[in-house]
Length: 116
Image 1 (spheres, rainbow, N blue to C red):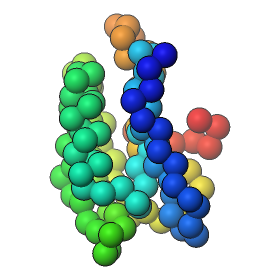
Image 2 (image 1 turned 180 degrees about the horizontal axis):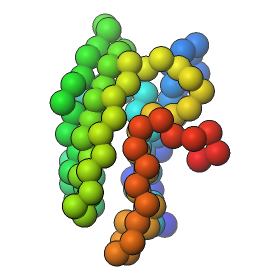
Image 3 (image 1 turned 90 degrees about the horizontal axis):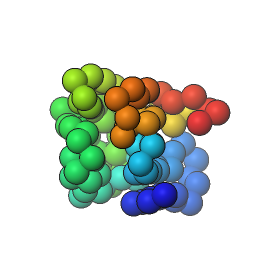
């Protein structure tokens, strides 16, 4: 099992921590308000190495905090898009690809369920 990064920040009211997991059978990204542009770009580059195309059509910051994010994800001919203004609802925002090394895979995009 190879984990490239797992990022957790101190909990601040209204700010969701972010997480990046790159494993053989799971690719998962939860975006959070404390993500810098350079971190977003590095995630994009690491995903490209796994065959995942990720672009950010809209990125807005309020000072140093990410306030709006839209992304487009392309993987094995399938596309997912999502957008958020980081209004905290108790669920992580991002995407998950389960079993990316096989021909069949499951893709979740947008607001993720709490059980994940």
